[in-house]
Each structure stands twice: as structure tokens, then as C-alpha cells.
Image 1: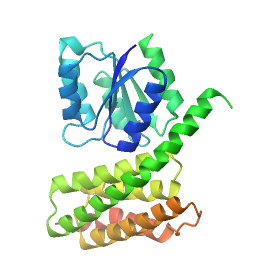
Image 2: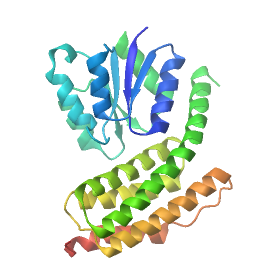
Image 3: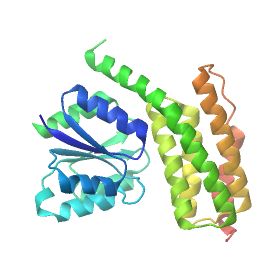
Amino acid sequence: MAHILAVDDSRSVIKMVEFALKSRGYAVTTAEDGEAALTALQQTTFDLLVLDINMPRLDGLALLQIIRAEDAWQTLPIVMLTTEGQEADRDKALALGATAYMTKPFKPSDLLDRVARLLH
Amino acid sequence: MTSNDNLDEQLLAEMRESFMVESEEILGRLSLLLTNLEREARPDWVNAAFREAHTLKGVAGFIGLTGIERLARKMEDTFGAVRAGQIGVSQELIDACREGVAVLVSLRAHAQAGDGAEPDLTALLARLDAVIAGASSVAT
């Protein structure tokens, strides 16, 4: 089963995303900021990344740039979590190589549909 | 009801419980940041305050706490305007945001109690709008 890295600085959001993904049998690793996510990426091979934008230390857009600059991570599917009113960030994320985006608030089942489509 | 609806309902109920703990922590940090910002308008403190308001807004939106979402969004806009260099950290900004935190604490308590009673946000939102719009000439 696919292994997904979910990154968000909100404990409530990350818990919801983790429970939703695990309910479909995915293996899930979580990180609460970009630096922790980068460390996890260097240690483990993931099949998909769910990535928030606004985070302390290394934000989602900066991490996205680092990821896409690495050959090994060029094709890693990345779902960015954006917020209503942050259309500029969303456009920037897509330009930097994000595969898809979800605008918060979203239904957990919509995230699961999106993830399933990207993994199959 | 479909299995997707059940899953959404269950996860959002759990998120609501988690939010009650997380929001208390966020409001504590926001309060401390305002005390720090009153002393010195450090950009990393402004960024941190922006992120706290942003996170609060985001989670409240998921679980339908519209009062908290609206007020946190306005506070995020306020810190965002500082971050963008449009306004400075004035005493009025600090005072209005302190009132904002106090009202968010009250909104959270009402959400926890599930009593449906919420303070009227009109005057406070207008006050924060005035800070965003009118304080542009106040430099720090």
C-alpha cells in the first residue's frame, strides 16, 4: 500500500488527514513543518505528499522548490493544501510543480478521492 | 447516508475535539505574541502571529465555527498588512487584536459549551478594518 507524507502545522488538520488516509489503508507519516518533512523525505521513500503552504521554519512553497530541484523527487505527486483567499499562493504552487491542490476547508472524502486518482 | 458521509462526519467530529485543545494553545501563543509585539515590532513575531491566526481560521472553517473563522481571518488580514509593509504595529493595532483574542476566547467557550450564543462581531470587525485601512500612515 502507498506510503504518504502529510505535512501541516495544525495538529487538528494533520490528525484529520492522517485518520482519513489510514481509513483507506495507506501508510501515513506526518510532519508539522517543512524542515521535518524534508528530513522525512531524505530518510524514506514516499508515494505521495500532502503539503500545507503556511508553516513555520520552512514553508510549503519553499519545500516544494527544494523537492522539484532534486531528480529523485521530480515525479513525486504533491497535493498542496491552500486556503480560500490564497489564490496567488495556489498559482505559485502549481507553477513550482505541485501536482494538485485542495482548498481548505475540504471534505476528508474529497481528499481521499484526489489521492486515489493520483496514485492509480 | 453514504460511507463517505459517515467518514466525513466522524472525522470532522474528531477534528472538533482536537480543535478545542489546539485553539486554546493558539490563543495563548497569540496573546504572548501581542505582548512581545507591543514591546518591539519584530518581523518574526509578526509572521508568527499571522500564522497563528491563519491556522485558527483554517481549522475553524473545517468544522463550521464561522464566528471564529471570520474574526481569525480579519486578524490574519491585519498581521498580513503589517507583514506586507502596508501598516505598522500601532498601539491601536495591539489593542484591537487584544480585544480580538478576548472575543475568540469567548467564541471558543461558546463552541465548547455548544450553547449557540455568540457575541456580535460587527463592531470589532469594523475596528480591525479601520486599523488595516486607516493606520497606513502610522509608521513604527
